[in-house]
Length: 93
Image 1 (cartoon, rainbow, N blue to C red):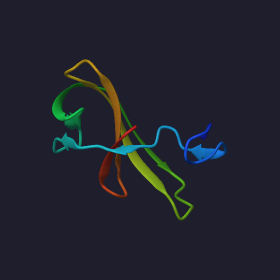
Image 2 (image 1 turned 45 degrees about the vertical axis):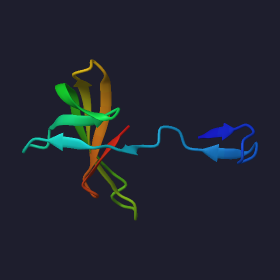
Image 3 (image 1 turned 90 degrees about the horizontal axis):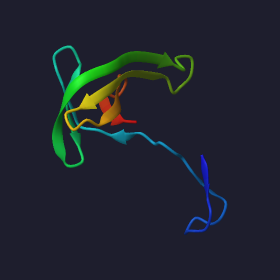
Image 4 (image 1 turned 60 degrees about the vertical axis):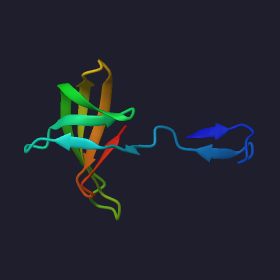
């Protein structure tokens, strides 16, 4: 959380940092991302650097089930995306 000085929200306004953004991803039949829509165009994934899954808060009303991918795009830019397994939606983190 970050306290925003000034602005329309006032000096004590708090906003979240690193809020996940919806992401367009094309994946293969195994669920591995092959292309990511980044900065207005589709970019090929040249390497999957890391892949892991997390299941958390299963005991609450807001469980989390995500599969994370650290990718290297053809532009040379690294990007972290995840598939929300409960929503079946992709997000960039």
